[in-house]
Image (tube, rainbow, N blue to C red; front, top):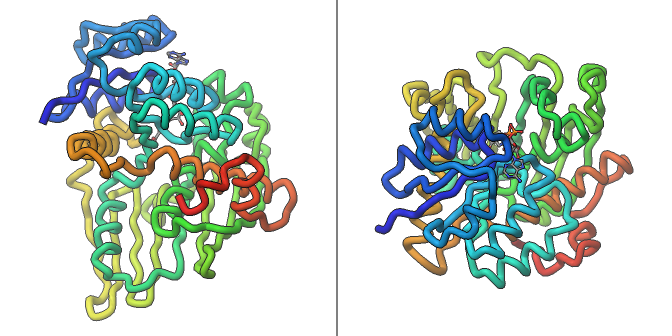
Length: 363
Ligand SMILES: NC(=O)c1ccc[n+]([C@@H]2O[C@H](COP(=O)([O-])OP(=O)(O)OC[C@H]3O[C@@H](n4cnc5c(N)ncnc54)[C@H](O)[C@@H]3O)[C@@H](O)[C@H]2O)c1
């Protein structure tokens, strides 16, 4: 299997994919790029790299680079995905893929023309406990699922140190809830209607945040299954011994499971098996490589290797979530945003139709 060559755009959280590529047998790190020269030098020194640039064009013009990993501020993702596709590169774009649907149609056209993969880096799908939960689901251990509850709570006030976040570029509905919404759509792709309430807390307002930082939603599928998504971002969360900052609970006719981010816990109660708690903490050094638990190198290594295996296999293998699936997830979040404004249930279909995206129903 030929190694794929990677360029990395944006070197804040981009640090995690640098580590992932350097530790992978399936990838070669070709070049890193950031507008911030000091950060380029810092990353080059940290990982002993001899190639970095402040010009994205330079990476795009290099025919030896197969794929670009995009880790720039949320509002720039649409432009950067477009530029990479126009240059004939595969794209790995961090979440949120985009934070509105304005450019969705043109991105689909650009991808069709380029005939390259666009993979959305929904890191939580690639975390140890979520992987194990998915395997149990695919084995049928839960029976028919009727409920998915996913949440991501964290004291993310530190994020407001970033100028783009303070300037209104950060919407927690997209930047934070894209994790639990994606987990819900992984199990229930056909979310049809959403309803929720949210608020901007005084803690968030004091830091200049302009959008809601605390939100609870309920969602339902075409055939009446139910889901719940929550996120609170401007206050200390509950202790991780009692809950986990990122959690996904599946309930089915044959039992339930809970995958937790902190402490790498996974718990199940399946018919005939009793209650079991799995401790995967021994995997922590693979997942958390830079101190603290705020980086995602292990998840990124899992997803870039999955991406590389799909590329090697060729069609019809497509790394998921792909562009179409990612855009529908953004449509679900857009419907959620509208529900916050109108305090009414909103259908995903209406949002897709308004944005000339009806062809994506079912993606
Ligand atoms: N779990 C996850 O997958 C996860 C975790 C954290 C962050 N993220 C995502 O990663 C993205 C970046 O977040 P961050 O915390 O690193 O932000 P950041 O502001 O620390 O880093 C973004 C970097 O992009 C650079 N940049 C901006 N425009 C550029 C351009 N045109 N060319 C080259 N470099 C450019 C900036 O100089 C900056 O260094 C966000 O979309 C965020 O949501 C994902």
